[in-house]
Image 1 (spheres, one colour):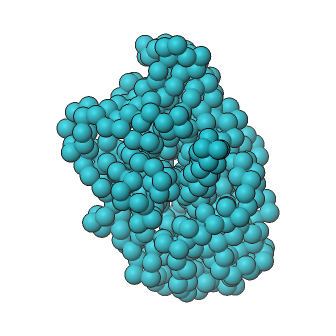
Image 2: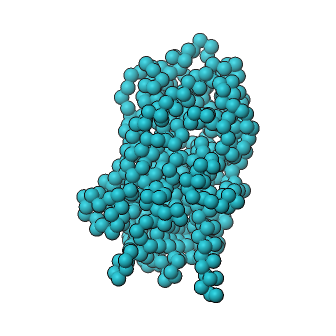
Image 3: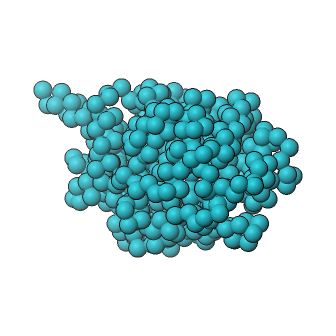
Length: 512
């Protein structure tokens, strides 16, 4: 890894990958086996930062709004959200839960080689995934979910199966986080250059004498504000690959002239391709939490047990942790160390919104709306999920960790007083539907903006231009599995291997 300030003013590579996150790192690492690759990351290294590496500091970065924070805050519809700004992407700031996506994801993502899907998951798992040690509170919660009807008990598995299970984690037994950045150990050091604090301003295209624009380089800025250019070597198959995430990839396409004409015109950006679907179909899975105070101490742990229901709601948990990242005084006399959070996530979701650029500065977030709960089915799933949680709280298995005299209404009213979002709402519960709307949060699994079939083709090539792909969460139609990091890392590796093997076949064909 090198600081971008040390980069040459002009450089040449076979591949340029924009974004060192969950997709970009496996992709760049894989391509480096045979070709020269430049990986541009706008953030810092995760190494040596205890806020990232220690499980006990989970979430501390969400309140850090400095320009060097690994988490860049944005707000949509009164819901506080976060965009990763660090080598390793979301794997550096998430809750660490690792679970493979369901079969539907492979189909929607056009990943047809089942063996390669499996091998790509295993490639990641060998390096950064561990089996968690399930302690007493987690075990009680697991029993509670089973009693509440989230059957069957599927034990420890990475697979997405209906019922209750223990999944993998990227935190090891010492509570140290392992991130996608660790996958760089697979890289060919002679083939891969990684630059930190390198913010791409735009992708460059050749249009003269061509029927379609050809991507041939990028302009990026270092931390001192100096501009650099990186170009593709002359090879016909060389490419630029955008892996800047669900906010960054549509934003960069627009800044480079690919997007809805009205938006580009409004910012005086020269229209290269009028592409109305860039920034559309943005979705964020709603999360609602229920803090349940406990009469006894709870061991700190984050997301190890998950309930996968039949009705499209996923129930996760975090015990002994301040999962709202607030001051202890807001807990109405209770303590986050004596209690835990049940977490409900709506799958899909069906509700969608859109992303728009605010200005020409890639450091700034675009504006995004997700239209949470616009589709009644999303709200219905939340209601079923919350009802299941309340049933689990009342179960025999969970009885040691709940005050006997606390009713379901007491618990919901307590949670309505917690500062979980910026929405104005009543402090007492009137209905579960209203509770879902009033305590709405993000589980940070937002996706879309460069949908497969609309912005990119089934090989992730950007429609209407040459030598440019988008491979990341912006292409995803529905959030995969209970938590998407496993699927996004797999996608990066899968596409890296696919690009290499296609290129090898083409090269051999041309030789013959």
